[in-house]
Image (cartoon, rainbow, N blue to C red; front, side, top):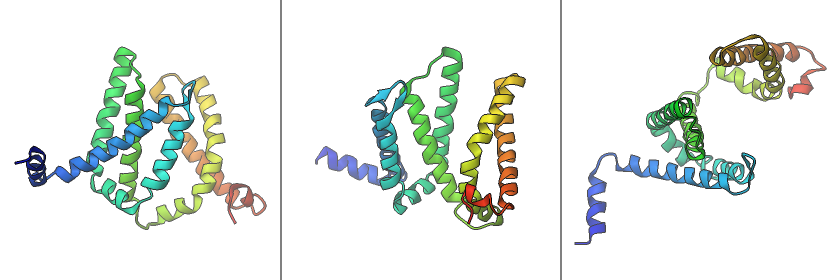
Length: 196
């Protein structure tokens, strides 16, 4: 009997084989991202990596079947993301290890996990989701300026990295929403943030 046929029939009887096959495909896409990082890398910024991410997002992650598979394995993807992120943090703080492979893996698996969680929990209708769907472009326009401003002052006056990150995230989120609500009510300013 052919060994390949024998192993295929054994694997087809294993309950989780489809899961393993799908995870291998996701990891194979990571290899494209990681390989793209090294092509045309200019001081830590790779045009090819961003092109690969764009093309994967446009052609692969826009496919309904792929999104359904991501949603199906969201727990596994989130577990892989948290385990690899935890490993990266431990290696970085204990050994100053910051290798491109692991960093790109964390970014890719994290992106897939977030898409999977969004498909699972945010792909329905609610008042909050409707509000943020309408406000998303305006928030996108406003958030960077507020984030930089808040970050500048927090880094000046607050010690401790964790506290700085939390304050910057919470304060910039709240301030962005407040500014959006203010500008939304001014008729001549609405067009500046993309509201008709």
